[in-house]
Image 1 (cartoon, rainbow, N blue to C red):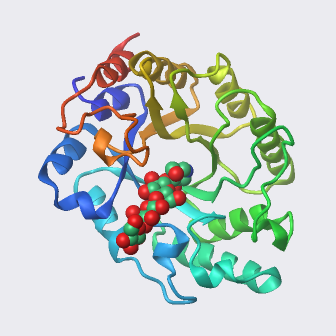
Image 2 (cartoon, rainbow, N blue to C red):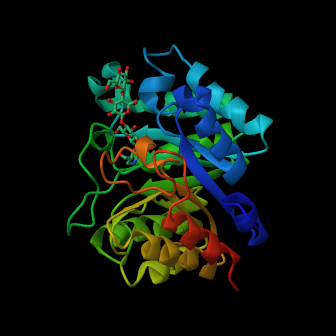
Length: 300
Ligand code: G3I
């Protein structure tokens, strides 16, 4: 096929992008979005600070703009993210202990219930593992409520939206390393104990190269009985097009890799200011990286 979404669909996958609600009035942006992508992730609008700016008062206006655009145009929706140490509202940042635990689980329940049936996959918990060699959890206010906070969040999400795929999502997990192995061990434990988890997201914020065991790392998670998704792909550096091709082929080679999301449309939309890590330039033109992805989706 001739677009990212249609080509991915021919391989049984989705091809998505992060979307910012305020850009839905930019006609160039929307033209590319509607032409190329069949899945969207709200870049910021479903995060805790956006959806519950004061405790117990929920705000879905901007998230709904993205959800409504997606549904009107036949796109599926990744939910991002129910719980994260970052982008918490100020009121939650100042909480701890059982009060924070209750507030966090209530947040999961409320947001997942509001969007019940509309989200194909939820990032239930984002970035809860530490960087470096420990393989352990990141310290955060949520982690300090007890090590079982992640499984409590997944159980609450399952109860609220039984048909959504429930994902754990993180970065610097792109090869077999201490951090990805820590997550691997958590997923294995969850599967063994019946904690509901369906997928693992690999953000894949990359520069110039991808670990040689990227595909093998996706596969080892798939072998635990979960789907894997590439959730926030962007690639800086002069080797960008080749690496985009490698990442795309790795997903296609893993049957349980169900889709790829890039973290923005044009380079000017990227959070990585000045790094030009996306598939379209600031004028909306297709870059060599775009062609590398499209060719990879259409090969074989
Ligand atoms: O909402 C305020 C707005 O009121 C204010 O006028 C403006 C002024 O700078 O800031 C706005 O908030 C910004 C927000 O994006 C919405 O645009 C924040 O400053 C800014 O820090 C925030 O950045 C987002 C970042 O997550 C926050 O951690 C990026 O857009 C977003 O791309 C990025 O995405 C994350 C994923 O969620 C998780 N994985 C890593 C990825 C990259 O950091």
